[in-house]
Length: 306
Ligand SMILES: Cc1cc2nc3c(=O)[nH]c(=O)nc-3n(C[C@H](O)[C@H](O)[C@H](O)COP(=O)(O)OP(=O)(O)OC[C@H]3O[C@@H](n4cnc5c(N)ncnc54)[C@H](O)[C@@H]3O)c2cc1C
Image (tube, rainbow, N blue to C red; front, top):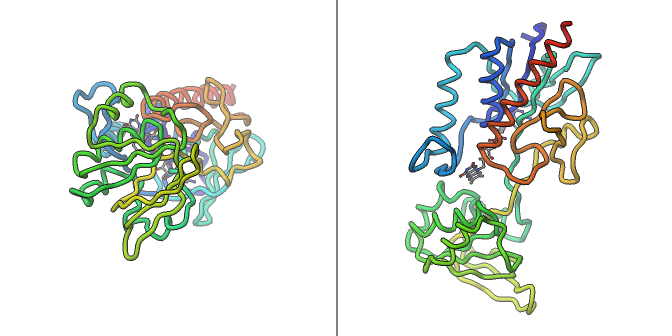
């Protein structure tokens, strides 16, 4: 495979990369899709159009993969560690040592969940500290838990957790939430959710597993302990773009800067989905951007041939 020249290499097989692959393979581009981890999705997705009652993230991804079976493309389970440009050819370096070549590249790398960075977080991850309510919520039946964060995900997950737990303490560092009004209303009306603001977690404590948290009210500076069995952390994302530093223009947090056509600062290199610098990170815009990236990559490749 290493001697082949692909039209397009897509890095990342989340909603953005899979959609880009769908568009590229339908356009008969010689396409290679690379993914370092298992392909999957999270949670019940209630806001993706066409699925009344919602669809699980896993099923949505499975359906896109099934749709892709009608078209020709290649897939490799490999991690990309470097991207180099040799004149107009893009060289994609894999952790296995292989180097693959393409006329254009789409980066659909996603972003990983941000950590709080407080004592006890790492120690108790998997033993009370969680970043996924749907995965771990059922383990906390009848318990009291804390949810940290103030965006859509934090509020959605706090509501979701009330299906299982006795009580959710929703802790946020600001007095107001960033989440949409409808979610804020649902949280405020839910008798199982107690809002604690403006407060930050200082420590997660326990012996074998989480037993309590220490939090500080940012107005009064008063510290308090709260007995909880779980801490669910939803405080945003950070991109995994360290390996692209200095090669592409990025914002101060490391998200890739693109124009409306999903073009990065380098010709023939496109980016889409959660890894790009933007305000809202949702499946719907990841898919839309994947489509735009693939269409523009196709145009770029055709122009090379002229
Ligand atoms: C708990 C949770 C709940 C959510 N709920 C919703 C919701 O209800 N509705 C909604 O619209 N959105 C929701 N989202 C957001 C949604 O999941 C993301 O916006 C979407 O997955 C972004 O798609 P993506 O393809 O850009 O990135 P991702 O889905 O993150 O996919 C990126 C892929 O790239 C791979 N990758 C990264 N780097 C490399 C590399 N160097 N080499 C090879 N492969 C690589 C990763 O392994 C990953 O599989 C939720 C997110 C979370 C965490």
